[in-house]
Image (tube, rainbow, N blue to C red; front, side, top):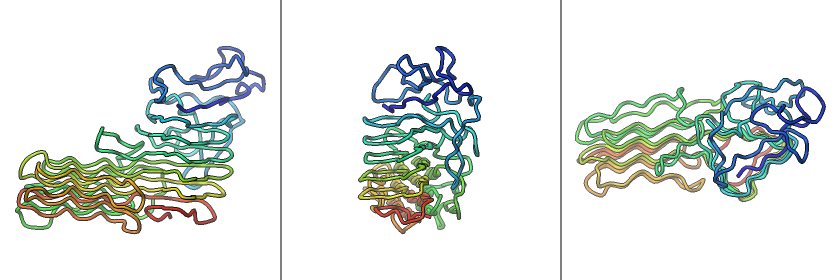
Length: 375
């Protein structure tokens, strides 16, 4: 679970240790430290509880510390203890009580968690309605995994995926596959069945991403469902961000194969967004990627689109097993566009999805495997 200690100390606005019952919700007064602390709710030790309101009132205090300037500025009561992820954990950004009250730009749009230091040594899977912002007033280290990726299996939608600003691809008709989702790169065109070209086109790519947001869903084929876009993650550190053999993944989900004979598969979901901001950002043997998902194959005998498992290997499109069109491969590396879905007499394949966006606000290249190339 997430281990967060001493979120507010002393009691906001007084300069004195907190008395029982006077900490702002969801904080409680620690009997050991006599400071307001955020504690976990009893339950499954591997899952952050999600039965408390996500938004709480901002404490009345002038002692706010502000972090970030690249995409957003987040002002919180300065953390006084470390935040660690020592075991597999799932966090829902729409409902988790771990989301802190904050002010600054874009208030209420994100889930914010913070510590004096942040150390991710295990796997943190993040889903929910809002993008995630992780703040360390000092050093932020990742030797495990942070995933805001979407996955077709289990219907996992990455945090903040499929925002309303996404452009819609052209609709598939008459045995066509759906177009791939677009964000930092454009999705591939959906494949045809037996009709004349062109197939469904993807929405345009975004020229510059200036707000933290997730990736876009792939278009539905005439039978296969489009994959969800990848989620959104913003890491901010006052000292440094060090990716030490760890992984940050914001890739999109694969499109579904056609569920009916002679129909088209779904387009893959685009990659999401990863932003890294600190005076020093380094990636030693780690992977940071926001790749597009593969398109689903046409026809019920074909395969679902694949999903990115590493930075520089494209998610494969679903393959034809019986006279249908293959799905297009997703984006990877310097290739920002998704592959086109292929034509087939038993249904067109879905288009592969375009790349997401990686923004790095630091004074040096970060190294390691990064896909797409950072901007």
